[in-house]
Image (cartoon, rainbow, N blue to C red; front, side):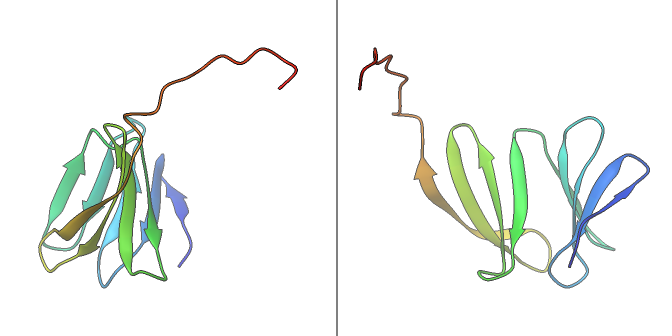
Length: 93
């Protein structure tokens, strides 16, 4: 399944009848014929075809969840980047 650009929306077909979209307003959306969900806090998202799940970043976390019949199900935190801090290191390393 490949992504396409349609009317300034990046659209990627994912599970069953679901579509992952990002619009010109930079808001991610999950759409199906009967359900529409917006995720304004998502900074990045994509479909994981191997794990059959949506993977995204928000609030310093890398998260993943499967698509259920009406929404995301079984959300899991894969990585918490919040404790990481920039540390300037002077060369030579």
